[in-house]
Amino acid sequence: MAKLIGIDLGTTNSCVAFLENGRATVIPSAEGGRTTPSVVAFTKDGERIVGQAAKRQAVTNAQRTFSSVKREMGSDKIYTVDGKKFRPQELSAMILQKLRSDAEAYIGEKVTDAVITVPAYFTDAQRQATKDAGTIAGLNVLRIINEPTAAALAYGFDKMVSRKIMVFDLGGGTFDVSILEIGSDMIEVLATAGNNHLGGDDFDQCVVGYLLDAFRREHGMDLSKDAVAMQRLNEAAEKAKIELSTSRETTVNLPFLAMKGASPMHLEVSLTRARFDELTAHLVSATRGPVQQAMDDAGLQPKDIDRVLLVGGSTRIPAVQDAVRKMMDREPSRDINPDECVAMGACLQGGVLTGTVNSLLLIDVTPLSLGIETVGDVFAQIIPRNTPLPCHHSQVFTTAAHFQTSVEINVLQGERGSASGNKSLGKFRLEGIRRALRGIPQIEVTFSIDTNGIVQVSAKDLGTGRSQEITISGSGNMSREEIDRAMREAEIYAEQDRQNREAAEKHSRSWGKRDAGAAKEEAGKFSEDDDGAMDV
Ligand code: AMP
Image 1 (cartoon, protein in one colour):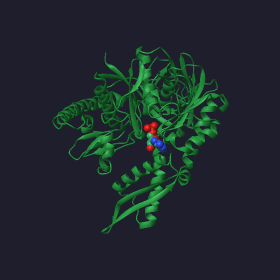
Image 2 (cartoon, rainbow, N blue to C red; image 1 turned 135 degrees about the vertical axis):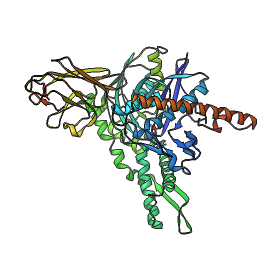
Image 3 (cartoon, protein in one colour; image 1 turned 60 degrees about the vertical axis):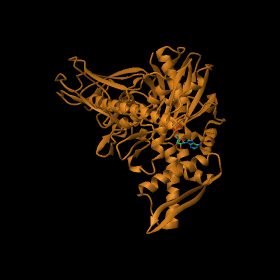
Image 4 (cartoon, protein in one colour; image 1 turned 30 degrees about the vertical axis):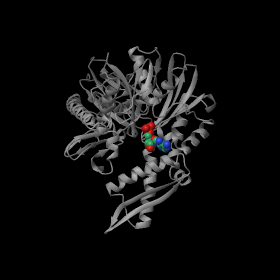
């Protein structure tokens, strides 16, 4: 039977795990790491490299190296290399493909099925894009699950004693906080909140700003437009940040960072943890709002929480740990590996879905409210945030004008009262409504969210029975044809990767020493009616 893998597709690093004798086991990458940098690069001769090898060459090939692609998932961003255009999901698919081929090489069996994780706070378009990335990589995506839920599953799997936990997950690009209740045969998410644009990358950027200022002060030069220097600064900033998690002071030393005329310019500057904490205090504070919101939504006080789990690499920052300690009035637990627990939880969930591990009910929630636009820029909420999944809600609306025969349904996601303050997930029209005075037609709008958190909306004129239905796909999402094309291309690459790997292995055999893995990895408007219905 083909094997199933759990994948944590991270902003900075990704991790893959599989079930070995009923236990989640992390699969090392071909290069020997327990996680794989989420970096994709294209060499000048058109070769594609992913992971550690791509990260290593980022400085010398900055323009053709792409990282933090997860931040753009679901957006309409296009990455261009040599005239060829890639969507974020296509680049993410390359990372998934690498994880898959490493897993196949490690397990020695074909891998087809996967559970992939996303931040709990990912919107519909971002989830859809992640699922598409899996499909492009040739994976049958059994389920998309939320990262904090996966972490809780990994944590609570063998200790199903009833307790309430908070998962505080600050990764490379996203922040999620979830409150979960673990029971003897069930994990239920009580509330989730977060910020899709808050993570370790932002901390790095604060340090980059500090380094740029230091260089400007010393040499009177602005390096912010110099791609190669910026790449080096980004790397040095991340390294300094990581060092400051364990030391009180670090030195950033970047010789030959730029040229002034014929003279090379160097950067040598020290950074204390206290200064780093000042530079990043606003980012640490930004975690407070979502924590409060999740606690309020769950109707709990800090004393009701039995354990606070820290997940995501950025929770190693001492100031972040301090903030959690203060907010929750307790010592947070670090008894799960923050880099690995999400992938492990994903594969356990895969095991539950395929019946290979004990049945366990996982109840997740929708992170953001969903509804439609009605007359006067009003957001009519149909599914409130934190509703357990899957769910199915309907509401009846009516027309706003006499003899109106069509309505536009603008599907919105967010927490603002005004339609324009929320994110539009897509629009569709319901035509052929029976001609009648305003307020007479009855249009039933139904929202369904599946267990992956993917939204489907339908509208039905109860008078004529005419209906229209869409699976939401934002502007950044790909059509079925585009996905099929990308899958074909990915298969071609996979074949090339396999050949490269074989060639590398042969090479390593003939040269005796070189390790095969290290050799190469290429491998209508509505308004509210008196009776609660809405006018179109
Ligand atoms: P994740 O998405 O969970 O892999 O988290 C990656 C983020 O964690 C990146 O921004 C890393 O720079 C950051 N990170 C990893 N280790 C540390 C550390 N020891 N101290 C501070 N940040 C870290």
